[in-house]
Length: 137
Image 1 (cartoon, rainbow, N blue to C red):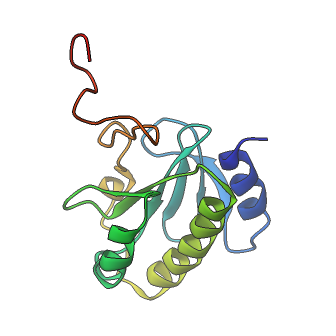
Image 2: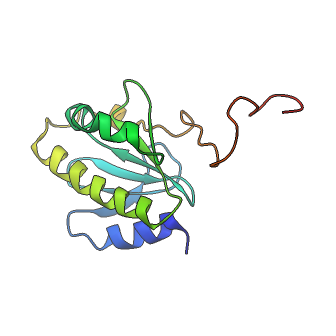
């Protein structure tokens, strides 16, 4: 079972989440009564819908994590699942997202479903970003 499958299986049991198709059109997702919360795009990459306030509050913690990718201006955070600790991180962040969306403003419409899919490139650990994509590199 892949890390994303393990996370999906665990989160699908949470009473505040229900399965749906990702609004971006790629992969399964889970939503609360108000918003899409998490998109499962691959065996290791997951987009999590937070609020601007939650991202701002956790920004420094995100900077310390090798699993988190941010896109400026996006309310979605990409979590790359390499190990069980990353799955645990995702589960904790889903809890933060549920609480943030419960107390936040109502969704603005379909634009809230625009996640970071295809806007984040995750390099495998140990890959040199200076040679990624260059001929001979």
